Image 1 (cartoon, rainbow, N blue to C red):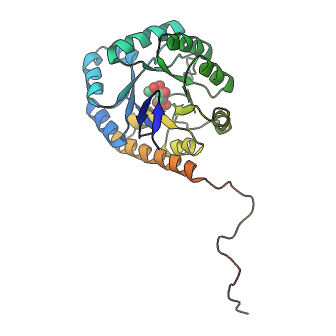
Image 2: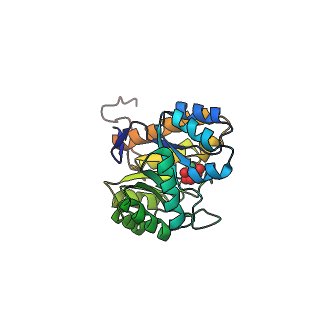
Image 3: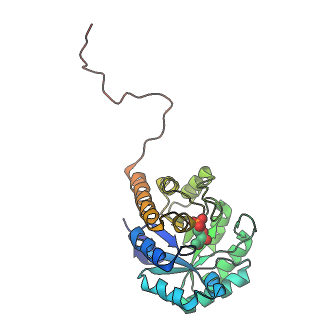
Length: 258
Ligand SMILES: CC(=O)[C@@H](O)[C@H](O)COP(=O)(O)O
């Protein structure tokens, strides 16, 4: 079944970041092979970098996918709101992936500033995708602010560590059964993506694991397949692990050779 995000429907459950690719051509090929329909773009990083600017944004527009601008690099609600407004002008979208970084080493979100920024942006008709921790109370506050999607981390951005707290991700899924939940950040391998999709997550957003792979386009395809596999497996109803062996071959009616 397709994924619905603020009224837009997409078939792919992979959202791809656009930073750190060896070249624009490799980025374009990775997007094609992944079959993603949504890419996230850092307005701040690109405008600050100078060299990319307009040409990079032009490339993104030509990919023919939905653009989810992000506020990467912002450290306060004020900065994030300003960046979101610039992104709305540049990309003509009310979607915004809201990142407000609070900790230098872990890039952990500042959840207080995040909630404040979300309230302001929702009141200004933005459709907010908040990058958050796996904290249930923060999740509730973001939903109360008007977010209809939550994007918990599974590990620090760029760490490739994969899910560090599966019980917390499970609780989040159980607590918010009707909310669209997208794991964002820290995924390192396709198997990590499958694991979170098997928990019933709706989608995965990742960047570094694809962009920094030896062959980013091939890795993008691997992630697309892994995410789809996890999604199908969740819907198919998986067995719970058991302590004891259960014979898979029936013993009734077997021949007796004394
Ligand atoms: C591209 C982007 O938005 C990142 O901030 C995002 O959180 C992805 O994280 P990884 O690079 O760890 O996949």
